[in-house]
Amino acid sequence: MKKRSLGVNAFLNGLRSVLNLFFPLITFPYVSRVLSVSGIGIYNFSNTYIGYFVLIAGLGIATYAVREGAKYRNSEDKVSEFASQIFSINMIATIIAYILLFASLIIFKNLRNYVSCILIFSLQILFTTLGTEWVYTIYEDYTYITVRSIIFKIISIVLLFLLVRRPEDYLIYAAITVFSAVGSNLLNFIHAKNFVHIRLTTKINWQYHLKPVLVIFSSAVAVTIYVYSDTTILGLIKNDYAVGIYSTSVKIYQIAQNLLSALLTVTIPRLAFLLGRKRINEYNQVLSKVIDFLVILVLPAAVGLIMLSRKVVFIIASEKYLPSVNSLRIISWAIIFSIFSWIFSDCVLIPAKRENLVLRNTIVTAIENIILNFILIPFMSYDGTSLSTVIAEFTVMIMNGYSCWDIIKPVIFRKDTLKNLFDSVIGCVGIVVVCLLCDYGFKSLILKTVFSVALSIIMYGAILILLKNKNVCSMLDRAKMILKSKL
Image (cartoon, rainbow, N blue to C red; front, side, top):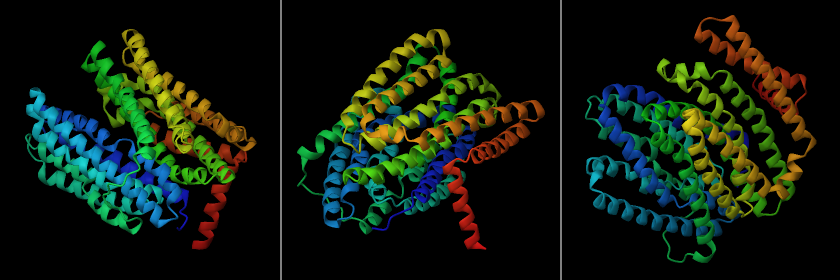
């Protein structure tokens, strides 16, 4: 199998994540003006409701498949047998999800107004399973799914402006959303045959697969409860206004978090493959590069978002959402903790088959987060919700790190890793200085934002070069070689 560049994969997966984030940013301002408030409400409720059944159908299989499948990818027969078993388990979970969905629609009469929209969104359950994106992740091939995503996003935006024209067109909007998200997954399934031969099979090694799959699924459920509990408790204790303000800060926080995590996702199959083959030295080298690379990106991203939070809220939302600025400043710290927690869980613990520890740590953190919300929200409202998220993310980072300390200790305490962290912290000081000077020097919001971002990048890069940061110098040398080859 051709070895693919982690840098290219990171770029492609990052590009796909950007498209997934910008699609609602482009479409929502339009549909919020065209559709009725009740139509938007039905759309959002139905989409959220189906999300639980997509979770059941997924069963944590994608994460497990990448970890286990990466070990077999050099043997077509073994990986095809493995993929067929995993796909068959996934289809069984999908059928169970549909049975539970239809049962809920029959039992809960208050869902009657949402049935049509829910059924449209329910197509995501089947087509997510058919998409078998874990096959592409196993083989580290992001080109096909990225190109496909670009094409389908463009078609969806065109369809939106052509077909969604009246307040009652929310069902059409739901169908376009499904088309954008999973419409091409049948093509995915067909194209996956270039890598593996997937078929339905009754010969499933349940004893081998079931326990880790259910443990990973339980972790996903715990994460879902953990993520949604903030908004739920805030709404119960405070009001819709507080939820709206907090949701704005969370949406901005998640954009930054998802972009950074997209760069991390592409390394998981490589690390799982190396650890599965007991190639520890190579594993440590790749993990060191991942940690160094993310330190260079995550710290300035968090500091930059804290410094520019007021401007970001004003530009992305509007003036009426400015009360969310402080909430955003608080929750931005969680970016650092959540990304490193994910490194420890998905890049170390799960490849090392310690998913039971991931489950334990996630459950403890979810309980902690819920308790903190009940304590902090009465006094701090949406700021308290943000603070509870930061504390919870810090806790799970420490717990995940401790759970894999025997593996990461040689990587964390490398001289180059500590030097890289020091360089990044000094560079972040430069970002703070630049943003303060731009605030003082410019009156226009646009000029403040543009110059703050541009000069911060220049300042951060210059500091790292002056400190002779190996990672940045290596990237510069590579860029010079590429330029020379083009000239």
